[in-house]
Image (cartoon, rainbow, N blue to C red; front, top):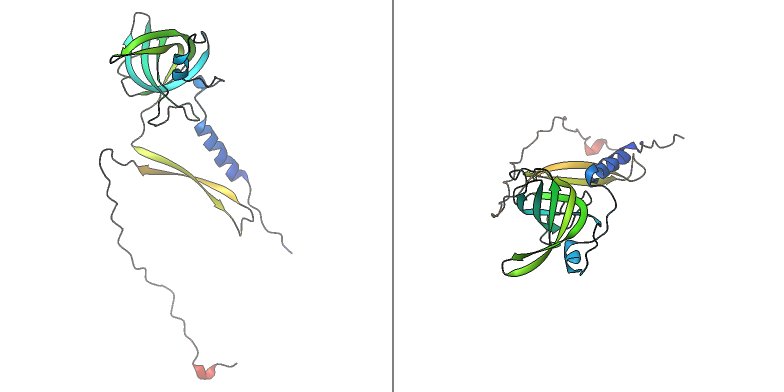
Length: 214
């Protein structure tokens, strides 16, 4: 009796490896960091000086000084790759300064960055008429993320079960979809016309009822 043929398991392992690699943070952003947010640090009477942090968010403003570049950043939660999430939620504001020159055209308002460094005191500024205590970060890295693509990448997995697989395993795929325009309602695309496909097989001839035997 022939045994059922099992397909190799390298497919799902490779697909899972690719997904995990895509979600891994860039090398400069890796490490162990406490789950402190700028809002939590701002509320402390004595912020932990020298504490390592990894915060990210959206650039609000930038100031090039003689020996360093400083950023005002609206913090957002980070995803598994340490990139700021697309979310209405924010974790407060903070200031980050890094030695050297950073081009303000590249780091214009609205760009997403992730900062690695150490806490370096705080600074009080006004937001409108409200006094706000900004945590300050002595940055070793201000990672500039590429602008989002006009297309959305959809990653999914299907599970194949039954003959000839005999066990379930995921099949990973990536589908590119056009991004919906902002500020306008997108109308559904018209359905493609139905095509009639002629049958190429010859018609089946059935015997007459008188010739059937039971």
